[in-house]
Length: 305
Image (cartoon, helix red, strand yellow):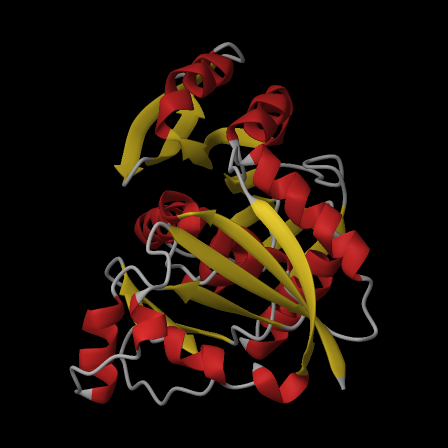
């Protein structure tokens, strides 16, 4: 059974950005080829010091993100989507396509995903892991498209949701991708959530992830251009996208907010923080908190009092 391996080659400093984008659009699975900490990984996994010379000679300055596409999907469309999102995230890259057999990748990438805890209440758990916890557990399968929570932007947003969701909220997730933020909000106690994304594949997968977590009856996923499908007012609005998209979106946000609504904007590279804050405050909103992690920024925004 022939699959397509879309290989995105990036500088190591962009590795997590490329991984986050790939997981957001994958319909099959991903694999990260990263040799930066090869010796430590081998010691931890295999407990040996002898490493093949070819592996030792691998380029440590680059990372290859393998995105696997099923035979019934169109690789050309997915390549264009990947390129578009990388460009929006200002991520230089090279790309190539290779035909592979399903058994070559089907299980190997699972070694890269493990349970993780975020904030005081959340745990993100791969579906095959037996992870006992008293936390609110979000079960996800990296063979589906999703944000793993490992990238700083997703982790920042999840941490904020962990803090602000008290129960009964109506939530809007703009650029929902995998649906992880809306799903987290629902499992933390939100009453209902809507997710909007321009990509039909992400909309499909967000629905699958919602079903996997038992919240599909409270989560409506819509295909649309940012907020154009949203209706009414929301208690919490999330937009974990990129700086340019947030600047384009933000003039429409006040009409979707109640008096005490919290708007969370993330996916912003720190060098563009000030211009995004300026665009937000030009609409009459107030940035009340700035959260930063490893060069990425999340902004907490409210109406002016």
